[in-house]
Amino acid sequence: MIKKVLGIAPKLELDGSFSPSKLALKMGVSDKTDFENISYKKYKGKKSKILVIFTESKNLKMKNGKYFSTGNHPVEALLPMLHLKNAGFEFVIATPTGKPVVFEMWAFPKNDEHVNAIYKEHRSNFDKPLKLSEFISSSLEHADSYAAVFVPGGHGAMIGIPEDENVGKILRWAHENALFTISLCHGPGAFLATTLNEQKFLYTGYNMAVFPDSVDNKTPMFGYLPGKMPYGLSEKLKSLGVNLMNTKMDKTVCKDRKLITGSSPLASNELGKLAAKTLLSELN
Image (cartoon, rainbow, N blue to C red):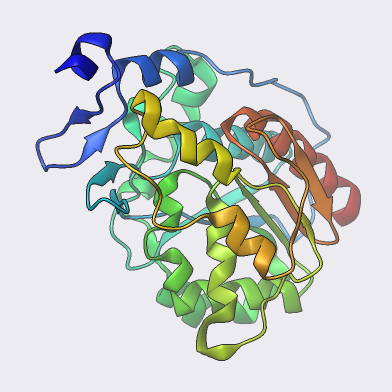
């Protein structure tokens, strides 16, 4: 009751999950983003496609058994896509089984015209995405048409995707064909899929920006998460040999070989700029 009065109690949703408290939304969600509408010299080559792997899952189980109402963070997905679109790239939208993309709509920047525009432009593909198995059967032989694989963040990226063999297959395909892999925040949880079936982790020794566990551990105090995370992502990656480039929830972005990562939602614009400029520089 006291938490409700203070506005720090997570909000109970109709399906029994919890979305962030009023205070958490006030602290962490804005009606507009820091997107910079840059006019890039557009890419006109053959490798114009980017596969975007979204989550189709909404509820992440915390250590205490409560579920966090999550999905893909709209800013973490759509700001990088805006930059890459402005740079001349197009998107193939996919989820593990072809179910609709799930967004954290409570985090949607309602008054951001650019975010609204690209969301509406791809709404039909978000509603009816490709399933990963279809992508594997139809597109792995066409690596020369692809520039990158992008895995947006949001805590939803940690539901099922790290355990999905098709995700691991696609990340290895990207690596073997010298495609770029782009991700941020909790999206790098997808990289754990490369360890399935006792395979060697693909990114040992890489520098990477990832959402810090120390912040995830603090957020239940003001009602962002309804409990502690099931495991610490950044520590898990560190244990596999990743060199973490950030300790805070900030704008840190990092490029190491063909991997481009960002630390948090605050890095979405910077990640988009780095990805667009890198792809244009190295593919043209």
